[in-house]
Length: 465
Image (tube, rainbow, N blue to C red; front, side, top):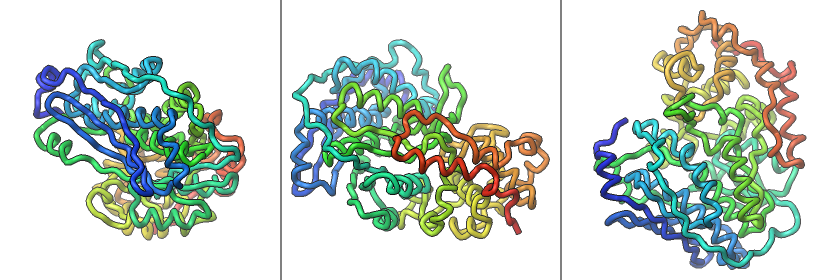
């Protein structure tokens, strides 16, 4: 995708993009965090509103750790606006010692944006970071007693995370722009409270997009992570937990201008490790950040929900449907890679009829999805820039389905040697990835998914009609 507005002209006309900082203001029972971005004649003032905090917790918003997290959040949020100009200088309100960290963050965090817009970001002078932050007084340490803040999206991974975490630790739930369906499911996960964050894209940014300025994917999940860390610090949590998986580590493009491109880079082990470093070095008073399900592939995470099938059926994850309506948060478009993957995975783990009931249709019967499934399996083209399983997971699942029948969406792959020679589902369900960032208290419950893959619980075929 090329931009209608010339990139060189944009950069020359907007040489510096300044993140003027972030301020936290208590308004009634809410904390409103406001950002200010300045570039050329443009000024943007987006905000995030945190709800569900107690008065004594809101009072901590002036502490240095809270201010540091707000400035980090402002820096992440800035990339959603900087992308419209790609200014060669970005002034950010963080400590000078963080320069190297942020310099390592932006190329991967913005990788999909650069790829889709065919932007060469590798020139030494493409982006220069200028740090303007100053140290402040130390803040209060986390309150004694372990308590987790679970980032809940309403999808299968975050549901498995919440159900697993509550077996090990007291927990509260963090929701971002929650839809009714998300709130409904979250309220069943008690007895902890729900903390929410609400924010909207400014119409000024949408107008720039309509005018032909560069647009595309930005580090959304990194913003969620810093927002949850801020909420967790204020509320005294010891841990902020994300529903990430080993499947997130697989890139969509193996190399673009010398670097892999991963739609979900801010959900990878690499980012989680970076964020752990950020917290340990500059805001040790904040909660620890971890993805306890990190060693697991998505199929293994779904296996953790075997005993909670009703709850699984209420989860969603289709961004296409969510963007087109103000529905319950459990809608499915039935045409995107996420829907195709959820249907395939549900069919393999719980049966074809359950999958049809979950997404509201038989996606295997839709021949127009054949190309999508082939790209998900890595047979040709580019892996879709959406939430799907790894190539090995997709191939293993398709292999299981084809052992029973040849549905229209998968028929062209029935004789492909790469599918026939794919790992068995038992092998996939028995895998285990990096676990050094998994909290010790939760690890035994996560390992349950691995033991399910030792043989008895891995289906050999799917009941495809």
